[in-house]
Image (cartoon, rainbow, N blue to C red; front, side):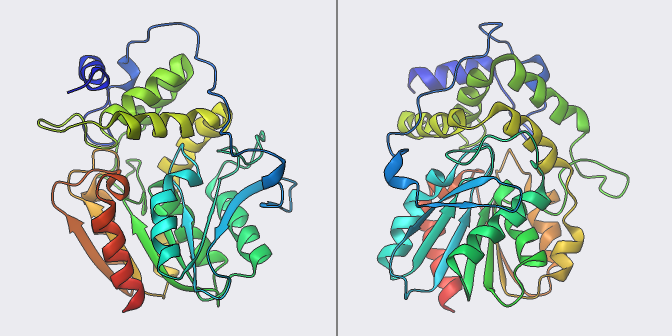
Length: 324
C-alpha cells in the first residue's frame, strides 16, 4: 500500500454512508486552503470553438469526438470533477463508431466560473444548450453520481424527442438527504460537515476523498492507484470552490422523484453495492421502482467510482444495453 493510502487511512475520512459523516471532524494540516492546481495543458485558444454560451451568458466547454454520423452518447460527470473523468468511456465508445460528447458543468473544469446557477435546473438547461448547439438527436445520455441527477432532469424536462436511452451510474436520484418522506436518506449534518471540510482545506479533502471512499481504496486489501487519485484531485482542483460548495446542496437536496416518474425511455440503472458515497439502498433501488422502463444492475463489491476502477465491466454492460 503506497503513502497516499497510508495517509488516507490515518485521516479516516468519510468511511460510511455517503462517506462524509466524519467530515466535520476532519483534521486539516493548514488553516489556509491550498491554491488550485495549474489548468490542464489542453486549455487554450485551440479549444475555444468547443464552447457554447447559455441563455444567462455562461460558457460551457465540451468535447465532441468521433464520427458525426454515429449515434450520439452524451456523458454527464460527477461532482466535483469534469468531462475528463469520462475519457476512458469516450475513447471506448468512439472506437465503436459512436459520436461521444461530454461537457464541463458550469463552474467545473474549463467552463465559466460564475457566481450563481449552481443547481439542477441550470445544470440541465446547460446540458440542453450543448445538445441543441450540436443538434444531438436519438442520443444516449450517461450520468454518474451528480451527473446522473443532471441527466435525469435533462431527460425529463428537455429531452423530449431527443433522448433514446438513459444510463444512471452510482446516481444520486431520487433524493440523498433525509426528510420525513425520505427516512432512509443521510442527515443534513453529513452535508454540512462536508461543506466545512471543503472550506477549511479543499485540497486535502479532495485527496482524502479520492484516496478513500470514492474508489473504495479504504477497504481491506484494496490496492490504491496513485495515478487515479492524482487525476481525480487534478480535475477537482481546476473547478471553482464556489461552484463546488453550492453543488453540495444541488446533489444532496434535489428531489428527482417526479423526474424519474416522467421518463419513459429505457433506463439502465447501475450501482455498486459497496458504494460508500451514494448508498445503493436509498438510490438505485428506489429509482428502479419509480422508473417505468428500466434494467437494474447491482455490482457486488464495486465502489462509487466503478466506471474507472472497473471500466471494462461498465463499458461492456453499457454497450450491451444501448445495442439491445
